[in-house]
Image (cartoon, rainbow, N blue to C red; front, side, top):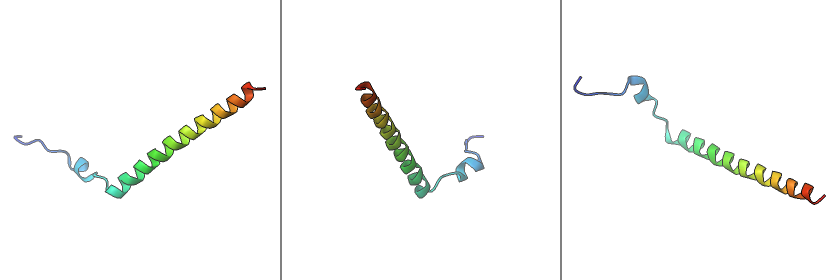
Length: 51
């Protein structure tokens, strides 16, 4: 055992760059949506506070 290697399953599970790009875009969409939801809640809270 002079050389340690990754198991066969791990070596073959390298994701293609297009799939990684899709995951990155999904992350960006999630962050943007989360910020938009918090901004909407803040806007509604500001309006309710004026009542």
